[in-house]
Length: 123
Image (cartoon, rainbow, N blue to C red):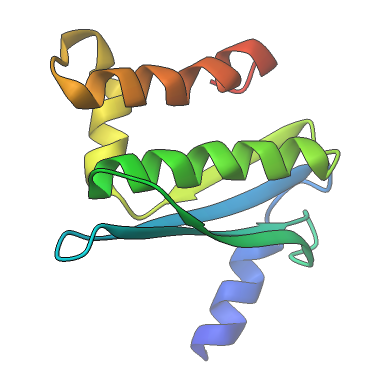
């Protein structure tokens, strides 16, 4: 089975009323540049929205969190009520799971990342 076919079959297992929102953030500590990329696919695996933006961020974690926020915004703009968000950032996943125990500058960023999802019932 080819990688493309496996990916296509995996996408088709989504319910038709769901979107799958892949998001990624990038940060270069040498010059402080950052960006995010988001792809939103419907339950049939078809592209329905996407975005690539330069952003301001102070860390890789902040860039990943801002990518997730942008993915949430695009999911709402795409009309989806059931979104599955995917990130490759283990650090962001852990930060969201342990936000109550976090301290320091990244805590505000992570709390800010959770708020829109809590309001929409997606968090």
